[in-house]
Amino acid sequence: MTFLDGLLSTASRHNATLLLFIVCCGVAVIGAFVIRDLQAANTEAQEIYTGSVHGLQQIGELQYDAQETRRATLYALTTSDSNLQVKYADQSRDADQHVKDGIAEYGRQARRPDEITLAKRLNSDWSKYLGVRDEVLSSILEGSTGEAVGLDLSEGVPAFEGVRQDLNEVKRLYDEDASRRKANLVASSHRSSVRLIGILGFTFLLSTAAVWAIQRSRMLSTIQLAKLQMEFVASVSHELRTPLAVLRSAADNLADGLVEGKPALKKYGAILQHQSRSMSHLVDEILLFASTEDGTRRYVLQPCQIAPIIDSIVASTETLMKEAGFVIEKQIAPDLPFVRVDTLGVSQCLQNLIGNAVKYGGDHRRIYLRAFASPMEHGPGREVRISIIDRGIGIDAAELAHIFDPFYRSPRVHAAQIHGTGLGLSLAKRIAESMGGRLSVSSELSVGSTFTLHLQIAKGEEMQIVTANAVLSPSSQP
Image 1: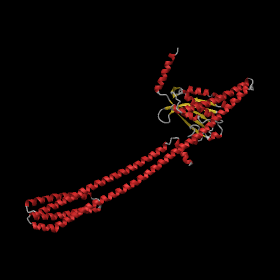
Image 2: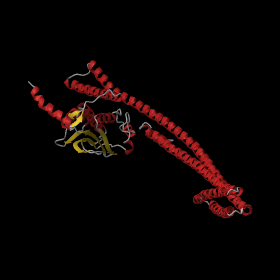
Image 3: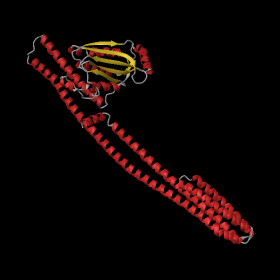
Image 4: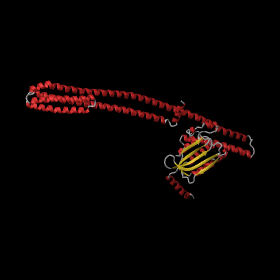
């Protein structure tokens, strides 16, 4: 379950979107299979219906035309009126042509060997009957009615009976073909039903598994967040307890008159100043995190020159750097373009990154700050990058995906007893993204880390406003 929980924990960071996407894909594939089966069954049913109707119509027309041929011949045999005999003979020959056409059409449609054989036999039997019929009609027209009757009884009737049997055989084959196709359709429908039941069962299992996975990922996420929050409370309590204890001890010594002379008072004043500044920074960090968490913090973006902001930040962190024994080395490219930022926001972001570099800088007491313009990694255009580089303990590759999570602190950091709240990098990332930028990191254990703030360059219309304000500002002065 450890591997599964790790996978679900990863999915929970994306609000289980991946799991829902898999379920949707599964349902889409299942729907495609069901629609394909339904379309195939519908097409086959239509083909069976069309083939059956056409076959029955064809065999019915053949039987009717054959009967018409036979009926006209019998009328000619039973009348003594020569005019009627000629009329009936013509009718018999007209119906005969329809039968020939129908037999020829059946022969063209024949596909199976038994159908081809039957088509040939039907054509032969019909030709045989027509030969007898022509002789009977010739005898009638010549006035030999008795001879015609005898010929019809001896040869015509058996020949026509063969044709009738052939036509019945054609009808039987049509019925067999229809029955076979119907059986195939029933079997196909049965397979489709079984498949549909299986697919619905699979969908149910997949959906159930997805819901379980989502719920479990949320539970794991909640447990992890609760654990991190407990660690955060413990860290904050420690961070507050230490300066409070120092402040109270210093205050007690001052109140009891144990501190005498200017040097001692100066020393205690420095202690009080340092500890109060640490507490103020901690409280400000917590309040800033709360404001970014609930969305009440808003940044006003405007074109700014980044070099003066960097100088101001370095100046504001000078005390921190001296107390920690660190030196910061700046390298700012000349003529950097204006960036679209909130001055306070970018200051807070860079201060957090510098403080982080000091905290984890190790024995190499030097921090490097680089500011330069560079092409964007994704998409056209350029951006301004500010990199904070240290040569400290570095970050393990497996932890890079978590370092920007709120309250997260590496086990190695805990083991090294490096105090902190786990909010600094999370705040820096949120501030960067709120200004339309981003924060990236590259690191190697025992080598150091590089955190880079990517900022948008101000657009042309924004720069026009800045230029106009610069032109108007002198005239507004007295």
